Image 1 (cartoon, rainbow, N blue to C red):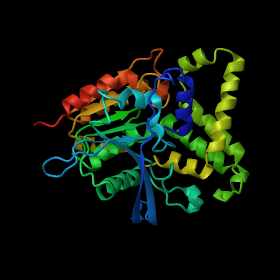
Image 2 (image 1 turned 180 degrees about the horizontal axis):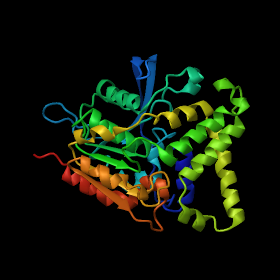
Image 3 (image 1 turned 120 degrees about the vertical axis):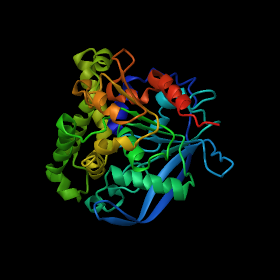
Length: 360
């Protein structure tokens, strides 16, 4: 989920978790440097930095293989900290909770182009390699093997972009994980309204004269603001917004606050790159390679992945051990951002972990 979509969810549901009772998780930071990394575009970087956070301790079986690692993948524009959101972490990471950090070794990567990992704003600007989801997954795989010495995953759980990467992971590295839990996406080419919105966000920046082909000295405010307006609508949930902003004044104040924050904290070139990274995503032809249990969850009020497309109900049958769940609209769902509100779907996670538990 783009950081602006994450912010919208967090602002809309700030009262869901008590600040006085919620534990705080920060994670142990680390960096992996992939030397001479080659991208699918033919471009390369001499040193690609991938930042990550971890919680818990890796456990190795009698053969020396890690058997308790869980890979948690953030959404577009997020970073390694995104899933430390209390709506997610306080429901899952505590004692006796589904991803108890005393039992599991949790790994949170910051993807290429985002967070503290290598990205256009580090200096290369629009000369940064044009990465895609295949590059992201391949670099994650290399980081796990060479950097963290993790050769197997108990679970891959991904939200939004991370959801899409979960499918790429499953078919590119079959069996590397015992189970997959994609949240809020579809495993098909991004077309229709989804791609239109991404295209318009990018075009609004690139057509701003202040962008200067990416060589701006100050952010192209007009284009960046309009792009963030587009992304706000992408992540919107009508029932939530009607409830939380029931008057014209409240609705306009929310927009002003939201855009002031996102426009000030977003780099235009970075946004172009991570919104466009999905341009050639399409795992639909090879989903049958995914043999492990899959618990795939979307919500009925997701504007980005609307249920009326009927895609999920068709594609789920291409994977032999996949289950698709469409969460109904309630006063607890938050559109696309429902992927971060773990209290709504945690029982499905428990079910998946039980079903995919390795046999003794």
